[in-house]
Length: 627
Image (cartoon, rainbow, N blue to C red; front, side, top):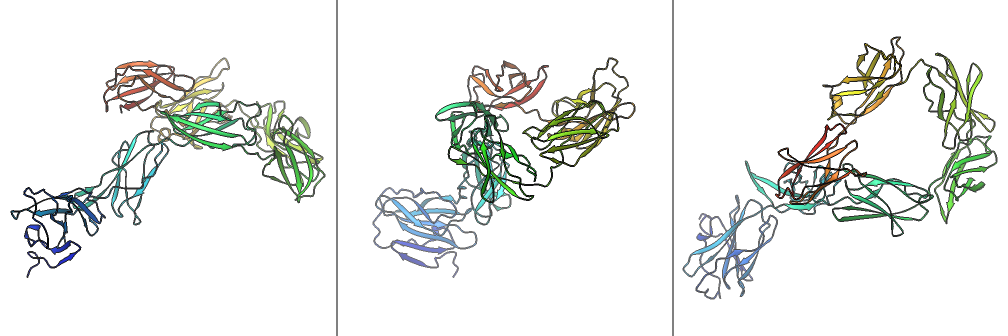
């Protein structure tokens, strides 16, 4: 007997019957279960009211009260599975089923008084992705859960082209580009059930939230400036003890911001600084507590009897060796301290802290050295230089000698810097530079004077705005050399020299050099005269002309607003056909607001926001879509 036409088995459990068959419902046995009352004269067709999604283990719906409802699962390889349930007095029914499989179908039928079958069917859909992660304006990915092995795909404002495969544990991660605040991103999953035949789930969606503001700089007592990140274009306000003390705007592209603390002496220990970020009336906040900073101290040698350093004005600085205080003192109002200590053995470790209002900083450790270190960070010296600059030990005296004769000296500042004025020296002269303090003398550093002249000046170069590098070179320049990342590229020879000793302009054509189309590429130039004398090197970076950042524009709004980058002198709105609507002004915060009188009332329409430099040249252009 073939199973195609007859049920293999029948099981009656608590009013439910299960048939395993190989054919459609009209071939099933029409014998009703016992004690079934006659149905009403008008038979109601059964309906599936629940979702029919992969993995579900029950299906529910409605029919006429007392109906024998047959729920059939189609299966491509196994025989059809039919489960029979009885509708309750309200006509509702619930049927437990094996886990549903996407791409198959569920059908329900009842037998009418005339012996006919009526019903409906539904395809089993893929499950909607769940557990989507929060997406902010700085997010680079979106994560969630879906069916292992399926493909998940983004949709909405992010586009319909970012995909990933769901891992065996049911998780996925899709890389996404930066998204504008308040835009929508959806994620759906898909499955290929036959060649070029796909199933798609409904999309789970998320609205892009603004980034929580963060202070990324130190939050230390005495700080007079803080900086951080937030959503691009957000208004940043700083609050202390319930009062607003500063207001700035996050950069319209990077989201970075910095603000001055308008308090005498800066932040105090224990201050709670709240940073707010507001974007389209949406507010995010974070709070930070001001901590005690570490002090700084000068180098200590075996002959040192005074330690110089910097700290928080009014704080007490303790210097310890092996846990015992060997010296202490108070930081002056200018932020510097000078504390006497006994001479220490080479290799000893000095632990230095500062304390104020009950809080103590972390310690810095200074190791006692036998001798002073050499001076460092010396500038290159040429025949036109009259200053020697570099870094040394605070309080030390720097000496500059030629042929054993001192030609200049100067003290090292508390910030480790020194500047010694000297007369111009002949090419080839050798300068011996060293420092002394507390009877110690450092080894000398010898610098040879080179023949030279002033270095060139390079104008800003923007890869989208020009194909020429421009600037000026000092008088007497014969050849100008161009390098990219330290490697020679080309040179430019001057046929004529300035006769009045003034600088002269130069212009390098860099069209076709790929590196000049990459933002951040470092390039440099240096000059040489007719005798081959080389000048100093001037360097710069390829910069990007960023398009205006335009706030989300809703259909019919009165104003178009946003931010522009540096060097933008004017901004304007144009229709997508290129007709000027209106120019606007740019305020000190690089913000603009242009009156358009609701000229763009249709969702999906578009217009241009163009920025201009001082010469009136189009600096950048952004196409804006009406939301």
